[in-house]
Image 1 (cartoon, one colour):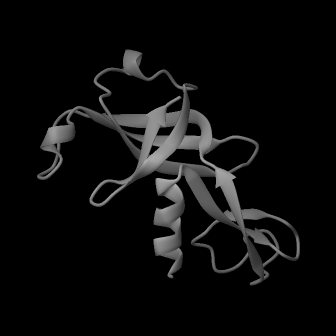
Image 2: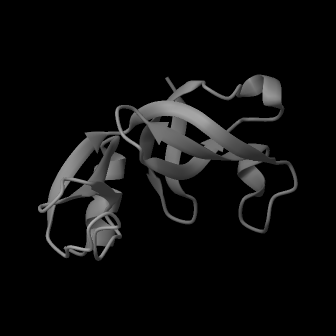
Length: 122
């Protein structure tokens, strides 16, 4: 199974596959090929709960072709708890900033072809 396929399978379970450097312990998203801190190429898989808080987002009210059924929606950046990592994803039903204050608790809730990682409020 490729890393992309593993990432999708974990996202469907509300988890995030990451890589931890075996030399210095720095945590990376699973797409890293070398450690950004020490340059090592050695990693071990670490699966995190996909829980955190909304760091920022953009609300989409005029969707591109194929996304009309989701409009309005937000493309969000989720700051994962107890890490420096952030993951981006899709959150349906967000029409105004009042619907999603920065800092709102959220979690990875799945994966949908064409959308990517789905994030929902906790």
